[in-house]
Length: 412
Image 1 (cartoon, rainbow, N blue to C red):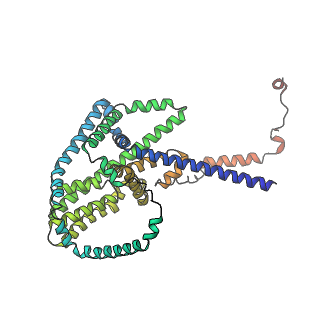
Image 2 (spheres, one colour):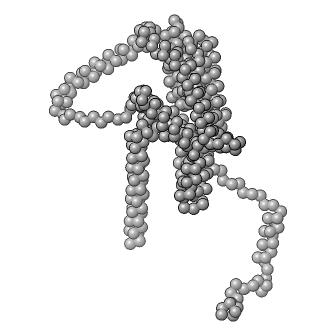
C-alpha cells in the first residue's frame, strides 16, 4: 500500500513539474512573440536602455564634479551624434560610389570567378533536371492533394526594411535619443521609485546589486571592445592603404563597426572586401591576398588580443554567441544583430545576482564559484580545542546537572 501511494505521489510530482515547465515555455514563447510583433517600438527602447547602462557611470562621475545630470546627458548625446555624423560623412560618399559602380562590374566579377561559377552552373543544371523528372512523376498525385497553406515566418530581410526608409530611421533616432536623454537625466530617480515599491530591504539591496552588476559588466565590455575595434580599424585602414584598396578610411570604419558582431561581422567584412578587391584589381589572386590580409588581422584580434584584454571573466561560448546573433537578428533584423551580444551579457550579469538563476548564468558563461578552502588551525583555535577536550573529561560530579529542579521563585 505504501509503495503504491509513494509511486502515485512521484507521478503527481512529475506531472506538476511538467505542467510548470510547459507554462514557463509558453510564457517565454509569448514574450518572444510580443518582442517580435512590437519590434518597431521595442528596438529603440532596448537600444536606449543598453546605451543608458553603458553611459550611466559617465553621468554619475560628472555629477560628483558638479555637472548636473541633464547637462551631462546633453553633452554625451551631442558627442555621440557628432561622432556618428562625422563617421557617416566620411564613409557615405565612397560607399555610394562603390554601390553605384557595382552593377557595371558584375560581368567582370563573373568572368574572373568563372572557374567557380561554371562548376556551380553544372550542379544547378543537374539539380533542375532532377527536379523536373520528379515533378513529372508526381504530377498526377500532386493534382489530387489539397492546396497547401503557407505560413510566412519572419525573415532577416524584414528587419532590413525597419531601417530602410527615411521615416523609420527618423522615428528610431527620435525615440532612442529622447528616451536616452530622460534615462541619463532622471534615471536614478526612477530607480529610487522602483526600490521604494519593493517590500523589504533585502530585495532592494539585491536589485541595486544586480543593476550595478549589469552596468559594470556591460560598460566594461563595450568600452574595452570599442577600444579593441578602434585599434583593429586603424590596422585595417593602414593595410588596405598599403595594398592599394580604394577608400581605406571606409574599410577602417567598416572593420570597427562590423567587429561589434562576433564571428558574423568578420565573415561579412571579408566577403565585401573580396568582391571590391576583385573588381578593382586585374589579377584574380590579388583579391584573395587582400581578403587573407583582412582575415589575418581579425583572427589575431579574435583569438589573442580580445581574450587577453577581456580575460576569462567576460568569455562566452561561441555557440551561445552565434545563437544569440541568429535569434535576435531573425527577430529584429540588423539592429538585433548589433544588440545580441549586449543582451546576452546583461542577461548573464542579471542571472548572477540571484541564486535561483545562477545555473542559467553558468550556462551563459559565468565562472563556477570555487569552494572555500579549509582554514588552518591557529594557536588560539588549538588551545580552544584543547580546553574543550579537557572540559569533556571533567568528572561527572563536577558538571552541573541539566535536570536540576526549577527554582521556586521562577516557577511561581
